[in-house]
Image (tube, rainbow, N blue to C red; front, side, top):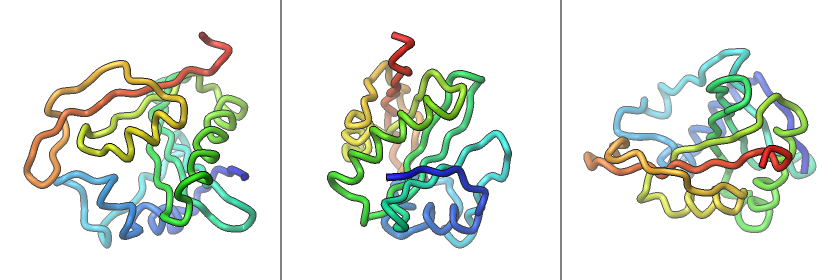
Length: 154
């Protein structure tokens, strides 16, 4: 498994708007897939996950500051199961090795059990909840706050 940062925003859009990805990463106020445009900024890291030449998906990393980064996962359906678990574990190691990041955090809507389980596979643990902060299909949902610190920072 390999990882590489990309600025191919067309590819980023293609991954994010995949029909089996986009419904799970958007809320009621998100653009339609055809209107979606990834943010283009040197501070945002779009990192591709590959198994050989096959693209499994990507992670988006948005620094909140130099050491704490927010992470969002967009894995394609073909990455499911053991490859997804492996990619999640190795991605964290890659980030620790290649950036100044010491802490990764994410917000998962409470109804999204699959994303919550995936975050825990990646080694994240819950540290809080943000009540009624995410709207999907007209319903307000809590968000589960999860994070992981670089092992040397414990």
